[in-house]
Image (cartoon, rainbow, N blue to C red; front, side):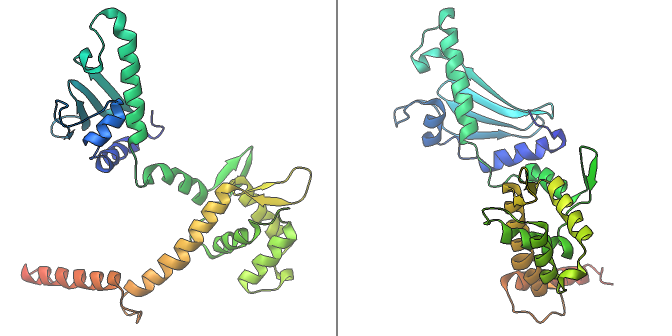
Length: 277
């Protein structure tokens, strides 16, 4: 079941795109736990049906078929149909039904385990929005930790310094590092402002307070988000924009060259169709 039905179709389309090789013999034998060789009958392929129907993924093994599709916009449904029980050396009497059910369920579980996504943007977006937007917890509210906000960026940098401290950090430690990052003296940053930032980080699950102390420690979520946000902003966004924006004399990189080429081609296309301004 998917907790965000509106993203289910996008999620399943990405599942299809990332798993087009599931019909290969080496993958099929993993799904059905059966040896596949040159004499094994059947066509080994992955079929994707999209026209006029709900998009679905089909895998075949002899006379057995697995069908996977997005059910009513709410769930990823996997169906296994065994049309010839002798494919698994099992008879056709009803007493063999429990054994066939076990084979089918096992194949479904192996399929899901084999399926993979290179990234889960739709699923991770909920976490990003939860960090970026205001949060309310047990009647307490805190503003969002907006990406690329300079003050928030200073917080991420400070948390990276505290991650390896075995006893955590205190409010005074955060105050000192924030003052350095902002280029001001410690007394310019009042205790109330630091308390506000601590409360903000705690309600977002980025830090947690150590029991019976006034010290805090960075959570696993906080560490990963701080590392990802700071590296993305410092190593990708800032130098990337400097390279691609017009009028900036940055080093020519493939991205800038590609954008310049695209811009020239668009202008040529507009001029050719008499659409130039």
